[in-house]
Length: 345
Image (tube, rainbow, N blue to C red):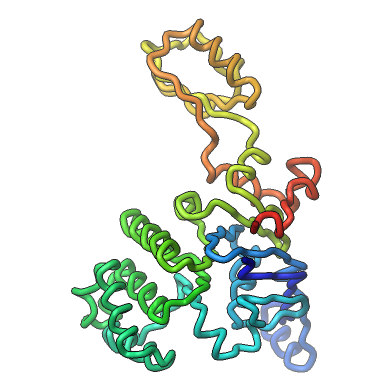
């Protein structure tokens, strides 16, 4: 079942600009100059119920603007969007009760009060039945290990503790659709892993639909089978994570541990050398050449251990971000872009 449907969604901002200095400042009072910024340009995709989709792109690509339109915080310049049958920017109460948007750099809690007070306010705003509120809060407190910090002022919490509380308050009303914008930003590796585990568990338990933006590829690879790559407001790719790797990184990485150093051996003749330090060597080779290069290494150098790996997904995404159009890499942007309806099924 389709939960989110976006068709030809666009958002154009009118941004004032002027040169520096007093004269320019005075001139702008009477005649201000503007330029148009196409933050989101003709974006279309669908998301199925219960799906976790990674929404990726560099800073300024249009990710957060798209999420704000889907959550109803922004009105689009043109296009359509329906989430669970609702038009988000109408901000109907029935719609707002079913969604939640968590932004890693924004706080929903009162800075000088303990989290518990903000939780109570949230429960009152959403008119959550008392028994449901208490059972959900108890469940979230246990899963996120919040018991010892509920009575502390928010300002005294560490970033990791605050992020856990932000997740808790976002889920108290048991939303069916989650928009997560950098939920693990700034927290340590251990906390990132705990947040990822929690998000995956919430998805399994409640069948929630989740759209996730993150610059931490561990978040994406752990949670998302499907990703959408956006840059300069345009969707560059919509499909399976493995498919992106195959399109943008048609090579393998061969890593070897040597029995002894081979200073005179020309590893560069086999492929691109990624690492060559003492007895450790890593070579990037075309995918089709990996078997023949492996055979040659095993026969010509003293190999203790050899592994053949796909390139890190960070490298794959970085290559995608480096192109205005996916067709610049693949030769045909239309082939690289997977129809949204097929991706959601």
